[in-house]
Length: 254
Length: 240
Image (cartoon, rainbow over all chains, first blue to last red):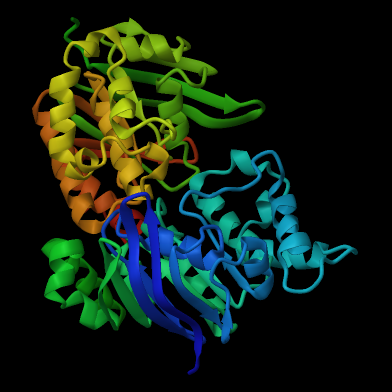
């Protein structure tokens, strides 16, 4: 597998605070790459720099060999990188269908389609189990549906690399399983996924490789198995209890 | 003070315009208890909390707090009575500092005098906030904002504290700590109404719970009864 995304020396300061410091990592084409770490470790900051919503203080971000560090987010999206947000950000006064349509019209890699895109939108709403809610105002959706709408909006831009920021946060275990099934299907369809999540069963169950951040720096990187047994990670992030719990979750799957 | 439950909800119905979401739910919370409302997203848990907090007017039903009827009363009056909600999605003042956000939590007259002591308690719970007390809340990470929102709720000297998804965005170590601290808060005499998707954690600390589905109560019991319940295990605890 070739590297789809190569990040080198990525750094971001906020005033005197170093949110991300000299970060290096590569994401291979077709993999699900997890980023975990304590609160304030710099996970979302790293995401925002890749997605173009935040300019790096230093460093390089290469996507398919092309340097994209400090590109504005609309150009990044048109290149095929799209993100979801921790707290969903739909256009609350527009319907679910309209929200997804915005992604199709303005976010895609191809030039904006002028004609109808109803079929494509319906297909996406079906994929994310939102068909029944198509005409509902997005602001009236409960959490689980909002999260799926966040995903549908990102998918409407036809991403090559999808950045998911806590897409399972606030979902119960059945809803989490359904969301993970969607991510697996996306991977099978060729989408590469960069995944931030605190739900350890979700992360350990779905990621090919995981990077752990702590205080803006890389603490560890490896397979889910390596990460769960890394003493530094257990101490800084997982805690004994969570590490046992998630290990149990992985065993059950096997 | 009356001898009955601190909070008594009877036949509550709530609608958004024409769409009715809550269909006559009833439950009680006694002083010092931790009671949880569990259910899938869309079941009406957040809507129930919003009605209790006075953010939505119920269509029917009674909400008695300390024996007084509060259904339909405005949110600021309900806060003054000591019924405090920590909302889902943080809702901080992004251009104010962490400490200013926390101090505004103690705005109600009943809490103002205790602000300093409460602040120390919040910092003991979340040392991360103390390290960032002069930082603007809008520049905190998601998880840190969550800590700040919880801290702000604790500042208000609540009698009944209502949590909506407090663990959202918190790292695993902190989630364990948060639940331990919620149990501590209850032991200090604050009554807790908890809405959470981390059902296993929740049922470990809850005295009692109610399962809500499509706006109705379908099951209730002690934390242990619900933990052992086959339906709960299958639907909410991820057992296969």
